[in-house]
Image 1 (spheres, rainbow, N blue to C red):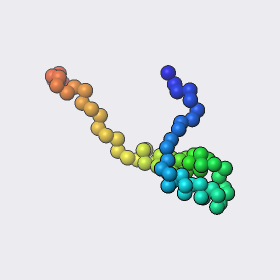
Image 2: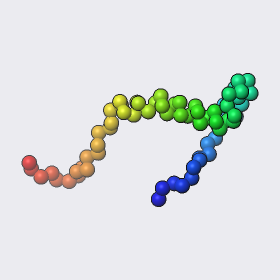
Image 3: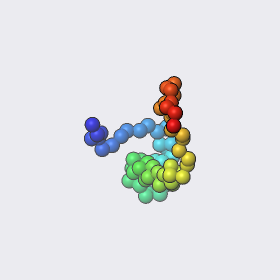
Image 4: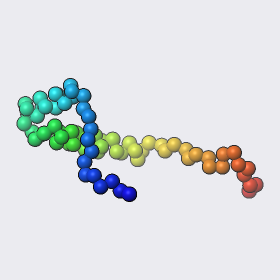
Length: 72
């Protein structure tokens, strides 16, 4: 069954939240802490996603472990 929720709650350390709030106050660019975190998250996803495509995938598990193999 797919998740029908649109949002998810996360926790931030107080120091991180305070730093974000100061940036919002000083720069006035983001309307809220949530907007800042959402934009920062999207930026990190875009930067890191290509690594998923370039990193080697781990070898698949041997599903025949402990079983006798037929001769080829």
